[in-house]
Every structure is written in structure tokens, then in C-alpha cells.
Image (cartoon, rainbow, N blue to C red; front, side):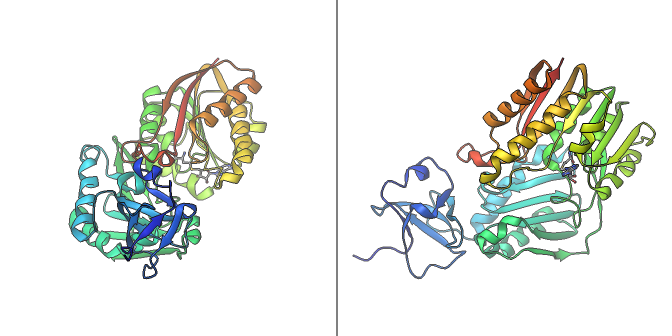
Length: 389
Ligand code: SAH
């Protein structure tokens, strides 16, 4: 009997599929039908020939199959439209309080390799799997019909694309040329440049933490790795005095505008262009709240030890700048630093700083960056709110 066309797993390698994990690594694959091409939607079978689901195939990636569904025989435009619309509906409550949010968060939303962000009338699309590239037009049509943006920009420029056999792409896919957008988030106003800003223009995933900083309303705040001052503004509108530190002059340059958009003069708010590590080694000032939000210091699994040291250093030095009884909001957005390691890093930093530290809050991503319970890799952002004595 001839085998049905598809990807067949090695014996015993279907356990993760039964546990609904969406990735099949190359080491688990026994056989691939010869007519299958990279980017195809393929049927996945166990070694015994049981049908397990459908997914995007890519022989060039370590992740050979990204599962789309465990139940379907095939996927068509209607299937994708309904899955994308489901994501859109799940953001309905959020859409009432902000004009900037993530509509689709890749694997965690069942759309492997697809991220869609909205910044007022601009939609930014990021594709990071070959299968996703194949359905680009379907996604684009859905965006235009459902979100009604003025422009759609593709920013598929992640450094991980090469490992997927993909070429980076940064171009206007539809509509008017991109112009900077003014977005509203929980009553605060920010300018976002989807074309040139870091990430897709604004750190949407820090929305809930910005609200936390606003609620703390510290008398003084040191905002480390401040980017365009999201936390700075959240504190400033409560009357805080702030210092924002970042190595990017263009990011810092947006802070005075953001302050003024929110009715604040820049007088009580200092911006410092510096390497945070250098800055912390020379500063003598103390604050009621220190925010530590470094970029992903670990890009590869092999870098974890080196990055853990850097995280520990920056947290140790930051503890020193907190007034007794004050707080620190410490974040890690590295996927390879899990909760256990992150708490170990904070523990070691606290020991070395000689301060007493309590954890008073632990937070993950906001609701538009959901974590699929079967895909723990999707939980990348970890935040600890600490009281420092
Ligand atoms: N907290 C920001 C996002 C931080 S992203 C927000 O809420 O919007 C990380 C920022 O760190 C970027 O703005 C980047 O320019 C800056 N950065 C990276 N390495 C740095 C370093 N060694 N010293 C200072 N800033 C750094």
C-alpha cells in the first residue's frame, strides 16, 4: 500500500503532538513525501500512519512542521479568515481603551509565524515562517476588509529569518505611504513611527507595566533602557520627577514630544544618552522607583550564561539606586531566560547588593500577547515588581 502524502514522524515522536505542542523538530521526522515543497501545508502522520494534523512544512528550518490544526484535513481561505477574525474579536475589550495593540501573536494565536500589530490607522505585519509567506495575500485581504487601515507595512526583518531560508522584507504592502501615528493608550498619547521605530514601532507588550508604574506614582523614577519614554510619561503625568537613560539618541529624542503631548513640560525630566551599565557605575542618585527593561540580552540558547551575568550586573547596580522602601520593576524579554532563572538572577543580584528585597508582583505579557498553555516558549516577557529595603 502506498503512503498518503505527508510528513511522517519517527516512532514515539508523536508525544509532543498529543500534548498539543505546535512544533515538530527535524530530529523527529522520519519521512517526507517527495512532492512536498517548503512552505506547503502538509498532513502530519505518526510512524504508524495515524493522522495527527496539518502544518506548515519547511525543510530548511530546525522546526520542520509548525502545526496549524490537529483536527483539519486541509486549510483554505475561509479557515484563515475565521481564525484571524477570532483573534480580532478577542481584542474587542482592549480596542476600547487603546488604538495600539497586537491583533495576532503567532503560534500563541494559532497562526504560526504571523504577527499583526495595529498603530491607529497603520497595520504592521511580520512574517517569520515560509508557510506564512504563502498566505500573505490572504492575510492582507483580511486586514484590509476587517481592520480598514490606511496603510499596511510589512516589517519581516527579524534576524532569525535566515534560519528559515527567508529573505528580509520591509515594504509598504498596501495603501498610503506610512506616516508617524498618534496613538492613545489608557488615556496617554504617544507618537509611533511604524516605519523606523524599534520592534514594530512601540513596545506594546509593556502596556500593563506602564499602567502599574502610573498606579505606583513614584515621587522620583529612574527609567533604564527607556526607549521613547513609555514609562517616563506614565510616571510624569502623576507628578514624578524622572531620569531616562538609553543609548539611542533618536529614541531619547522622542521623550520631550511625548511629555508635551501629555501636558507635561520637560523641566522635571532628564534624558541621558549613555550605556546603562556605564551610567550605573558612576551615578550617586537614588529614586523611589527604578525601571530596568533591557533588550533581549540572550538571542541564542548558547548565550544564556553570558546574558545571565549581564542581567545580574544591571539588576545589582540598579538595586543600589533605590531609596530604602522604594521599588524596582525589573523585566526580562529573553525567551531563553525562564522564570526560574530570572528569579535566580534577581536573587544573586540582591545578595551581592546587600539589600533586603521582597517580590511584590510577578507579571507576564498583556492579553494581546497571549501565552498558549501548550507552547510555553511563547512566554518571553517576565516582570518582577520588587520592594527594596
Ligand atoms: N522600556 C522601553 C523598551 C526598552 S527596549 C519601553 O517601555 O518602551 C530596549 C532599549 O534599550 C532600546 O531603546 C535600546 O536603544 C536600549 N539599549 C540597548 N542596549 C543598551 C545599553 N547597553 N545601554 C543603554 N540603552 C541600551
